[in-house]
Length: 82
Image (tube, rainbow, N blue to C red):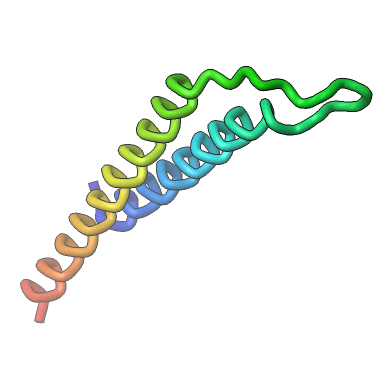
C-alpha cells in the first residue's frame, strides 16, 4: 500500500471521527436545549456521551498515527531514491 493511499484512508478516518465527536456533542447538549414549546430536558445519558467522545478521541489518535507512519514511509522512500 502506498503512503498516499494511507494518507487518504487516515484522512477519511479523521473525518469520521470528527463526525462522531460532533454527534456526541449534539447528544450531550440536546438535553439542555428546548425544542419548540417543550422545556429543556434534564435527562442526558452522560455515560453514553462520554463513551462516544472517547471513541471519537481514539479514532483521532489512531488516524493521526497512521498519517505519521505514512509520512515516515514517504521519507524513507525519498531517502532510498536520493
